[in-house]
Image (cartoon, rainbow, N blue to C red; front, side, top):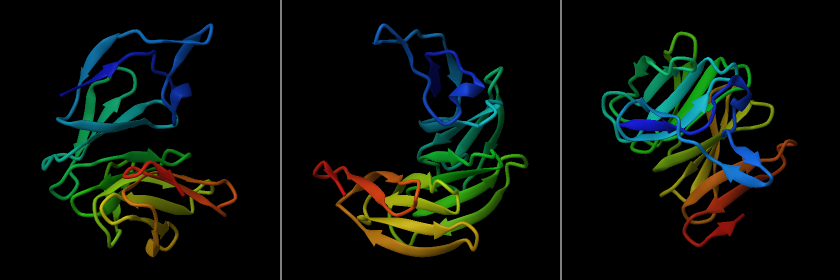
Length: 193
């Protein structure tokens, strides 16, 4: 499978997609294809722009393909216990990556330097998809598509705090900076809770 590079990639794109605009019109220019793992689902740059982490959906041999941010070559592949990866987020420091896995209802914490799995968080739910870190990066939230809930983890202890009942088929999640609220987008009926 391939990922398409359609904008200039640089460290300034770190946690957001690169979007070019001119006179309020969106521009997109196809540059080239980059060979990556089969069924690519999500991608994220490390904060310094040196690496691109690409998840591989439903892949039994590698859940993540890590690419060079300069040459786009694959640096390494990371196996996620016989299943693929869905979404990936990287902390602000760039030291840890978190990858969700649908089939097992899990989130993997990976050391970005050694590329080794540090911990596996079990959601005790099903079809884990979107993940996000709290603003202070002390908590991790994971939406569970078939579980109709969002798992909240304490990243200091590594413990599941609770599963928060939400709208049906929760997808997008956004914690506020003060950690008082968690917005959840429901795919089933187009709800926001």
